[in-house]
Length: 169
Ligand code: SF4
Ligand code: SF4
Image (tube, rainbow, N blue to C red; front, side, top):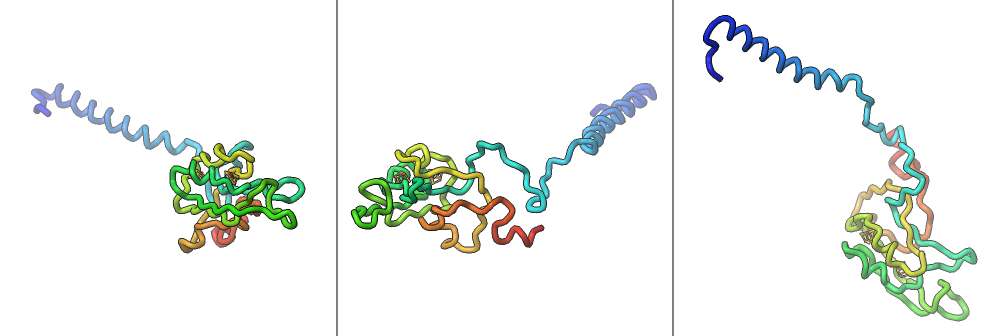
């Protein structure tokens, strides 16, 4: 910056500097009146849009209790993160598990890999697999992050009731 040549220039330079500082502080000052965007989770659980499907998967059943999953592995093939492992097996006439010829004897989703993209849901031919709105998924070990079939068949707990969230309240 060049030196002011006389007192008038000096006064103008000071006025410009004060203007710049005032503009800078005005940004800070405006924030005081802005609505707080922080959600005090888990004390406050912001409601999600009704059609939000961004959380833990659910393996669905037919009304008669039979599993919709037929162990076809299409979800596993569609997954870009290689997060799903399915091992199919044949149903028996005496004790069918699913409504198809085959069922998933093993069904696992690794939530350390899953990016919640929903490709698996799109690929499923029987609508056996859906995403829920439950995003409370904290784990204490790698094993805990791999959900087994019996866990995925259970609807997730309501938001705010998962183990551990009570301690944060
Ligand atoms: S949501 Fe995406 S990343 Fe997660 S299991 Fe399905 S396909 Fe894989
Ligand atoms: S969830 Fe759907 S796509 Fe995946 S194995 Fe079962 S039936 Fe096939």
